[in-house]
Length: 571
View (cartoon, rainbow, N blue to C red):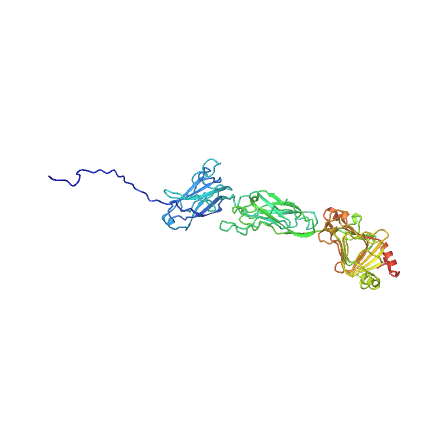
């Protein structure tokens, strides 16, 4: 018998066959998203640019939407451009930058068809395949391959919606606007404070085309502050030195009203540059303080400080040359009951005789007397070069004869008739004017900080070796100092204000000096700074000098020498 060593027959297997696919990672996110905005003729154009950091993408989807992105699929609809990748582009990681030009002109882009596919605008019905004018768009990019996708990347290179938007240009036909202040069109160039200035600005369309300019704005900057600086576009981006104005143009007093509408300017003859013009009447209030200023006109296309490159390609002629003008305190001084004399000249800015006001009731004597200066009696001694006082001046005359017997003090509590202060003397707001008849020698400067009012029976003669300054206001902000009494013999300069901007509002704020004033400084013994900030410069004097003979009578009694006479004599 024969045995077997195994089982004879057929064996069936139920094992499954499994084929596994290679696991492909998603493409890397694109990066460095940027755009350039320009015009192609009269149509807007957008140049998209981003860097490809992937080696396994089949292409990119570039999405454009007029609505801000809220998620991967919203809001809908949006336009999309498929930008495919060649093998060479996959290999060149990070280089070159991938680009797409979106416009409605013939494309030189090798990445495929020009137009976006679909509807980029969720409001306007139908497909908008080319960029609209003056429209905001949001955009994003993502890479894809057959099985995977990168994240959406929003400008600037982030993955959080909605990202930054861009705005296309209006791309209206080119024109070149220029601004020019018309010569001799201003009402004047020397103004009183707060007056109104008027002038004309000519706006010219210099472009040689038949297209009229768009409605624009003319701004006038009376003080040259806040001028816009517009530069030509360079390589599709604004010159970094370009900047808008610092604010809405204001007149010189701070009122923001210096903008004017400029209607479209047609071109009369397209073969003649500058054949289309418009003239704008400009009106503004000059400064409330005496100064010298320069104003400029600036025409701003499309009412924007940074106009489209397709509108005005030459911004350098949009600003006019400057109009320089002077703001002064066109006023006058008034003297009642006495004479006026000067070694140099006597001048005022307003002729006051028609108002019944005069620079002197009697004699005016000077080397030069301007036409506006008037004597009530008509006694005008021009080219007068004779001596007004004894050699050395009044201060030296009295100083040598009488100061030696004076009582030394620098206060206004006076016990003797003749007093002497070896330094500066100040009449403070806490002081009181002395009672009685006094002479006060001041070796330094005299400053009066409030009204110096003497009673009817008192007199004061100040003989000051330095300057005399009457403050404009008590303590700088208090009531105006509007009255000083006495005779002031000043070897230096008499100032009617302690500040340069000595504006006063009403005639009650004017300074009245009751007595007499003599200032010896040949370089300008009187420095009168007060002026009216309102309309009173032409009708009222900010300084009035009223002659009072009681001071001379008391002075001769006081110093005891009858041979010194103060009288009017024939020259």
